[in-house]
Length: 413
Image (cartoon, rainbow, N blue to C red):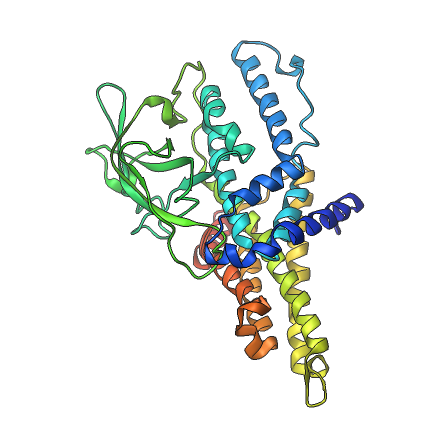
């Protein structure tokens, strides 16, 4: 794949017009936290029929899974067409266009997808029906809770939240999570912790995953934390104090009536999906910074001529275009791999994330420099793009963790 198809370009134009009508007028309210992104996300899904497509794909997946459980041929199950299947290209276009103005919306939407993805990949049929569908259609908000106050990049090794199995088959959950996207507003939270076992050293204990509902006894969701960027995406803390849950909330453990337990968690697959997702977000920031900077360089006059006539400004614009071109080609490479059924290596996914996010931050910084004092003012938007870009070098794995992942993958071959 070397360019967007004609169909994709047409879709991009429609999405861009929708973003300009439904998101751009609310950027300031989203940035201040006065407005949450969830109404916009629901509007997006209903406007483009994404909710019905998700519902049809869900029904088809459940029907096939039920057929397998019943010993029937899953191919014989008649289902409604899901509307084109998994078009990752279209998903990336939505991400790119929204991130040109408010990357936090994609962060909020993406984490709901992480929660639904965990349930759909690890859950039983009953668990998927109970919690998965409403997350897939965005009728409910999801959170994926892994990060803890003291763990940082050592997410699993430093994890202290526990789940203790009781004699009656229930579990008692204790612990805290921080920097949880959608945490303050999530209806459904996928909570990752360690099974309590006094005979096993804390770092070596088994990872277990539970599904929690808002308002459960012993489960507290804090107000949004104040932060530098992606302020359109509420971030909070979670506290669990002797929160007792039934076995039907355990993912991958066979909870419920289903004969077949869910699959075990695959954190590496989740991390790869996150890292590739950030590439499209970076591209949206870079495209918008370049667009704004180019226009400003044409119209801003200093010493009787546009600043775009000066070589130092031209160098910044040229470097922006190099970054845009490189990130776009990385994204095209990923989409081409997907279309051919090929899986990228962990090193490749991490390299894409490392380069694209560093480039996005540099491009946004250069955009502010081109705008000068105006660039530091909110009304010119580039300072907001910088604030949105900066977190991308931290979440979904810091730069340092990407370097480690790339090197370890290469050295293990």
